[in-house]
Image (cartoon, rainbow, N blue to C red; front, side):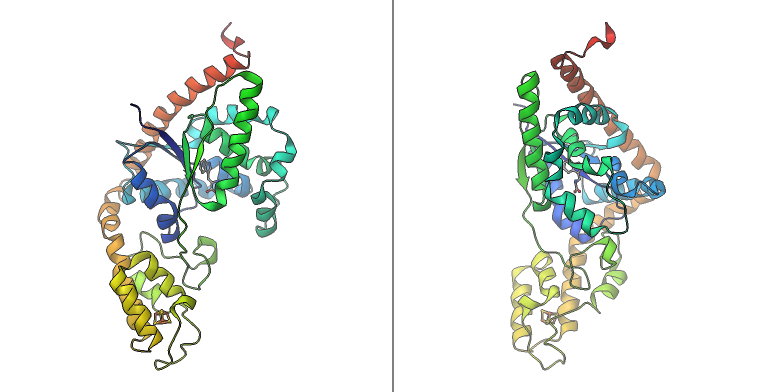
Length: 332
Ligand code: TRP
Ligand code: SF4
């Protein structure tokens, strides 16, 4: 029995932080046990917002891949590849663009949201409108059975299914409809209490060493009611406690909650314990990382090999697509 296939992608944003780890990567590492996995660094997706200056993408690709390998994505088991090294994604995206009605793309919720949020950029482009369509091509070119994503991407997978139905209706059953494998969303706040994000400058990175993690967590924002050591607090109002929920075992969480409510512990005690558990979680990653970080050539080789494997699958699908659409005359 072949294992069901999944595909997921990550934009090359540079070094990955604990939000990326707990929100996606950690899950991908586990999925390798049960699925045939394709994981893509979607560099063309970065261009949809960073087209004015793409010069940073190259370094970001290798940073992301290094963190993937450090986290335990295993190139022996999973196909790790770069989207742009499989140009068939672009061909399928073009063909799908003939089929998708523009209003389907205009009503994807992320379209207007992102346009409003990323105010420094002109996102009235054709490419940005097509972002979820390019994502559709990423997914279906591998005939993925399922797509592991967070809640924020669920609408994109839903659009993918709608496009698959429309395509199959016109040309015959080429693509399966992929399922959404929803990643359970843990809240991972950054040091300022907002969602952890590179652009907020509040992130703890996977590669941060013990001292750096301590220096970031110590001044972290807490329940504002705990002004002084003797003031009791409410853990539910404290982002440090959200991190305990993600990283600490039950005994520590209970210790922190109880000590907080009774002012039995200080916030620095609470943060020191949290940092210990974060560093425990990062220990394997820190042990594996230098091997890859010191040899970027090895990382590029892994991506090149993965892209070759991915491309063979994508080319086979494109042969079927052209045949189904009766545009397979190019070798006539
Ligand atoms: N849009 C996704 C994100 O921002 C990245 C992505 C691109 C993706 N192609 C994909 C995710 C295909 C899953 C499957 O996170
Ligand atoms: Fe937050 Fe811990 Fe301080 Fe309570 S004791 S406010 S949970 S840091």
